[in-house]
Every structure is written in C-alpha cells, then in structure tokens.
Image (cartoon, rainbow, N blue to C red; front, side, top):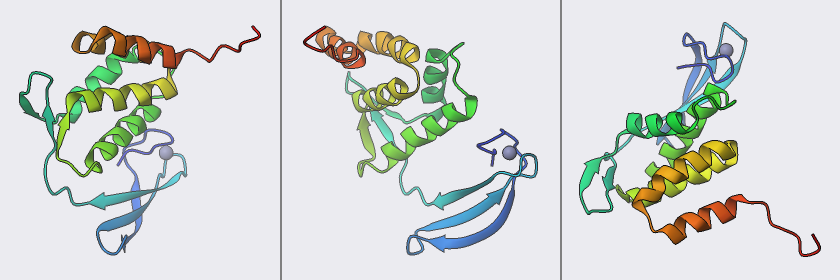
Length: 155
Ligand SMILES: [Zn+2]
C-alpha cells in the first residue's frame, strides 16, 4: 500500500482488526520512509460495477480508464499525485456505495467533474469540454456557470 504522504510503496501493517461489525478489516499502517501513519479498510466487493453508456451499451467499469481520463485532464497542473490517487479512490468508493451495480456513464461524469472542480479549475474545464461531446450543450453551460464565482448585485 502506497504511503499517502510521501508515495513510498513499502509501508508496514502495524495492526489489523475487524471494523464496522465485521464487514471490514481496519489496518493501521506505518511508513518507514517518512514516519507517516494511516489507516486502510478492506471490504468485500460483492459485484463488479457496470457502466451504462448513453447509447444503452453496458461495459464493465474500468478504474484504469477513469484514472487515465482524469490524469489527462490534470496534465501539467500543480496537483500532488497523492491527491489525485485519493480523489480517484474517493470517486470509486462513491460509485461502489451507490447501492446499484449498474451506473449510468452520465453519473460517473458528473461525479468526476464535481471532484475535479474541487481540486483544479483548469482540469475541470478540460474534462468538462470533453464530456460535453456526450451531453446536451445547455448542460455544459450549467456546469461552467456553476464554476464561476457568484457575481454580487452591487458590482
Ligand atoms: Zn511515507
């Protein structure tokens, strides 16, 4: 497990115990490179996620594909790689906890844009402009207007 603080891959498990009424294993980890401590949770994934494309086709969810599109959007942006990893894991966790294994690609796109908007505006616009090809133009306008800071009436 990669250290979220310094990126070192060789971290140690100090302690493992059941959590959340035995549906997860909580592991406390230690990074010998930077002294960082963090916790991971191991959970069963009962079913694999399926993406429902806009044309109705179904396709297995591919984390690598999601990661590639996000990394392209973030190219040359001043965002820490660890932060990107955390963001991607956060997106996948959100998808997995939606209660449905079949997820419309639109939903995934919206979650990605929401996450990108929080960490880098330029990457968000890049991603949204690509995503636009799959959506109605007025949807895209809405995304961009949400991006802009609200204008005060007296300005
Ligand atoms: Zn570390």
